Image (cartoon, rainbow, N blue to C red; front, side):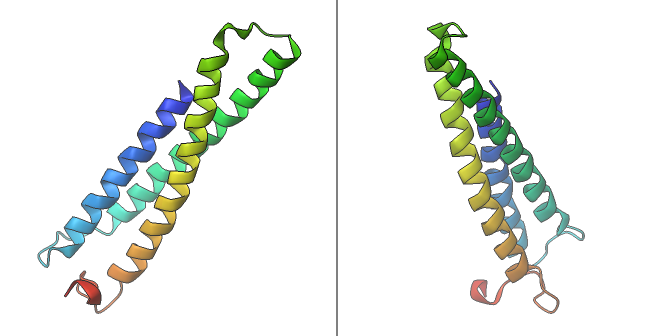
Length: 119
């Protein structure tokens, strides 16, 4: 469940990042829209944290199942949560890097909110 939550958060941050780029490419962007970058980064970081927690908890449970201290009936679901956590962490790191780079390129003083490569 936590793995799916982390994936949902990361996908939401990707959508928010795309909206941020669309807003910033508009010359008549609303004032204070630079905080959208921060919100996208926040959601990515929260998704990364949930992905890390999902992977960590699944790893512990998979070890208990392997040793025999836990029922093995939920092994497939636990393994799926571990994989979801790993994917969410990887996508979150990529989104954090991409959003940071775009923020530095687009929201610089004198750029009027439009990067030179968008003009």
